[in-house]
Length: 192
Ligand SMILES: [Zn+2]
Image 1 (tube, protein in one colour):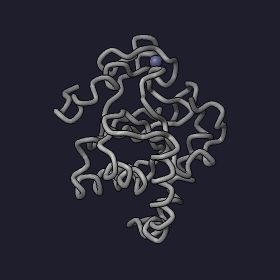
Image 2: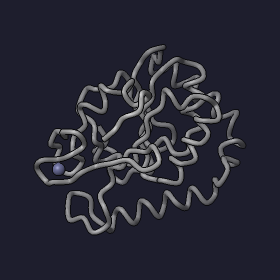
Image 3: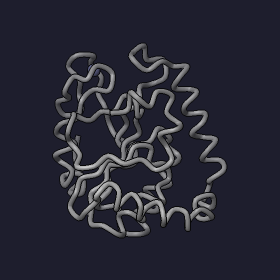
């Protein structure tokens, strides 16, 4: 896969991806164990299994999760839901920066980043590199557009993936954060 300069800044992440189905290390986005070739669509890396996949993630669950994520998109078509919550957002972002000891130059994983108002606020406050993961393509598309607008896209790498089956090697990130998402994961103890 051809990587952009921005993506090359995230080479530590992209060179140590694992297959979310079997945890096999990928070579150039390809899993030699199950044969899956992963890719990206409009700048977002795709790590959800196709519908019909008989692997670890079951269709029923995937439909359920996507259904729920799409409903959230429906109530948040242009960020109004989050804008109304912006005061709460500011407080939350400050609390996370303080509580998780977020500092410049860290590599951060945001699990369930959604359409990403807290993520972008965090990136404005600290010069961090963020990997955003969410199951909803609509939310990621929205986040990407806003990151471009706010000139923050250079420090943001986006994955459509399942929080219970993440494509990342262990101990890769300086910090792992999540804003109001973990309660939507069916088995939060499996997020690691
Ligand atoms: Zn595999």
